[in-house]
Image 1 (cartoon, rainbow, N blue to C red):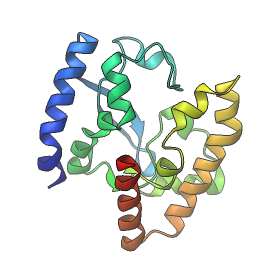
Image 2: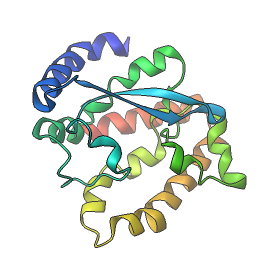
Image 3: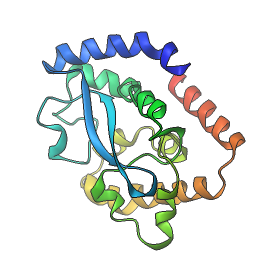
Length: 183
């Protein structure tokens, strides 16, 4: 249902991304999913070709982001193709965001509980850090701030989600996500 509702927006976003980046409007990358299994994630391209994998950290003033990409990212439209990942069964609407291999490898001991569920398009950490790129852009050392502040808090929130998972919690997270985008 969500795919049908958002399909026109995905198509427009795809065309704009394609024109802006002068390449395919879809960007794919491998992420770590349920039980540590790698899967291909789909996004609308928001960066210039060949620059996406130079850095795993993105700030709002990142020169790799295209003009259209800034707009797509601001409204999280670049994430909509992940509905295809949900249909394929390697993601769910709600859950911990899937990390790139380097970050997922940092999960040790009890933190690895995060990998026991399907990753989601949105979650508790997504809501809390909806302006993460802006937060990082304001830091003298974005990598240090991410490592010492954002990453540990995301891990804590993701563990909280896994331990307290319920249909009701998922509905609350979806509503909160929607209304935070409308603000």
